[in-house]
Image 1 (tube, chains in turn yellow, cyan):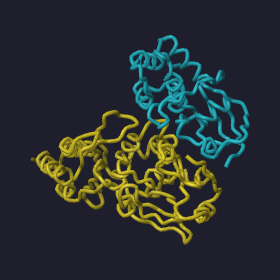
Image 2 (cartoon, chains in turn red, cyan; image 1 turned 45 degrees about the vertical axis):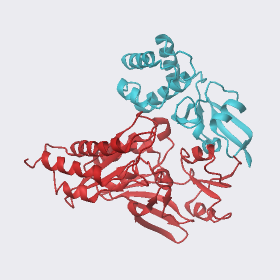
Image 3 (cartoon, chains in turn green, cyan; image 1 turned 180 degrees about the vertical axis):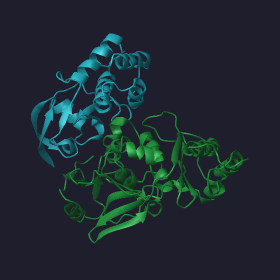
Image 4 (tube, chains in turn purple, green; image 1 turned 180 degrees about the horizontal axis):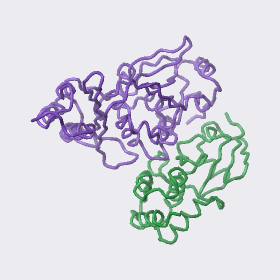
Length: 284
Length: 156
């Protein structure tokens, strides 16, 4: 491991400008560092320069009517402990709570999780289900793109070489839930994780699943099968049956492909039930 | 690239010369400041043995760049003045909540951090949930859980 040069710009403009220094690909951006430092430790990353975002004024959490905007460097623990987030975005609370441990979440950030785009991210599925958008800051100003278009593959995103993640925006509060299965509850990777959310304005469900390569994906057909409101038991059962065949998990040391398909349907049904505040309105 | 690092450690203003840019807070504490109470377990953020407080919040010092906490207040298990640490240490000692002791500083510091963050009367279940990131390879969890429950019962 070669020592790198560490810079901590004081303003967003300086931070963006600092990305232009040095040959392309030689600079890494760090927020909390919980993922990047692990890669450096294991020799998977060897940046010549590291730009730390710690001095930027982006540790923010703002509500504007129904819209929640989370600054990219806000520690996950602050998001988790916010009572309005827990009430209005229960699935987001559950997903954040699932990341690492308390000590890790005091450093780890939403922007970092998204920017690193780990295939097993516990946050990307709920961001997909909540139709979250990423606000990027570059030399020419800001642009906003949906998370679904931002995360392109395992460890790959649509971010430009001179852009930073400034914030993540959630368009509306939704009944939502996140359910996962692991060997160990903390500091482990989910074998399968399912995020569901119901949009009251659009009267539709959205469903996303993690633990399937190369990245968490939406399951629009499964979501449509839930119908326009609270599904009854029969409708939920039929939708759950579609989950396993809709995904392409793999066998690895954490779980077999068969177990993952089984988990997908089971966790999906549990997540939908958890997201429903009242007993199902529709009959069998 | 190295640079001087100014920070507060256990209440004392401290300046550490020539700290490499890629140095972890864990190594600064152990090898430059001689504070060996903070342990290196896995060095990959899995075990919690290296937990310290930065500005009162628990962090994994193995995954924290020393320079990223410049100007901050770092608290390790050695801090003799912190009332939450003192209370947790006493409770662990009373409950015999250790076997080999290697994970103990991490547990003690993480728990003191939870008391600061969630209040000294935080429910035991919340404290135990918050300790899920700390591993005891001796599997001596029963006494640790007993200590945490005792701590919650005697909450002021």
